[in-house]
Amino acid sequence: MRIDVLTVLPELLRSPFEHSIIKRAQAKGVVEICVHNIRDYTTDKHRSVDDYSFGGDAGMVLKIEPVFVLIEKLKAERTYDEIIFMTPDGERYNQHIANNLSTKTNILLLCGHYKGVDHRVREHLITRELSVGDYVLTGGELAAAVVTDSVVRLLPGAISNETSALSDSFQDNLLSAPVYTRPAEFNGWKVPEVLLSGNFGEIAKWQEEQALERTARLRPDLLNKRCE
Image (cartoon, rainbow, N blue to C red):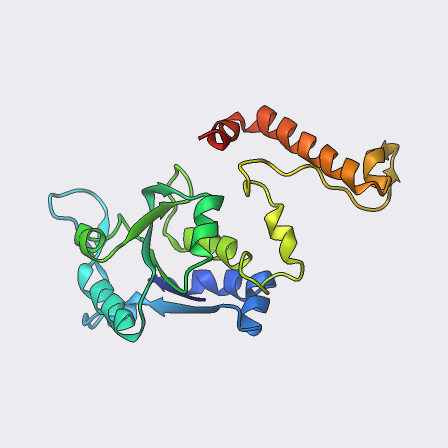
């Protein structure tokens, strides 16, 4: 898989993409992540990529020209399965979308900034708009890092135990069951006996019951989705 990220602040993405699972996945050739500075594609001598908003609204707007030039350059080099704009008013991102994106070959993430991007970009260049929550960030870089991380960890070979990702919360519209490790008792607090029994059938039953109970208590909306 290849992920291209378009941003005016590539420095914000350096750390998330140079550590942990994402770093190892890149080293193993599981994924290629390319960060592009939109400022490199402006003709403005001051490398400005924003301008005032028509209509007099407060805040600056990311200009269409450098974004268009960069996206067209990348599209000439490969075919993208999705060209995604990270924006607070986009489709709410979830595990189902992460699973779907992990099956793609090439995806492009455009990070919004300032007051947003010239709407013609959204109308003519973008295939999908995603939001990581009902709140506003300074820019789309952190949101793009969230999407990248959640997708990369699902790719075959990205994590050592591939079945681990399949038991994550939200994979089946359920929260995960509680997890424990050594010691079996600490400060008088004990690990549930069933987990120490070695009876994998009973353990699986307990985990399912716990997942259902936690979901019903903490996220009952997810149980409704299981019935849809």
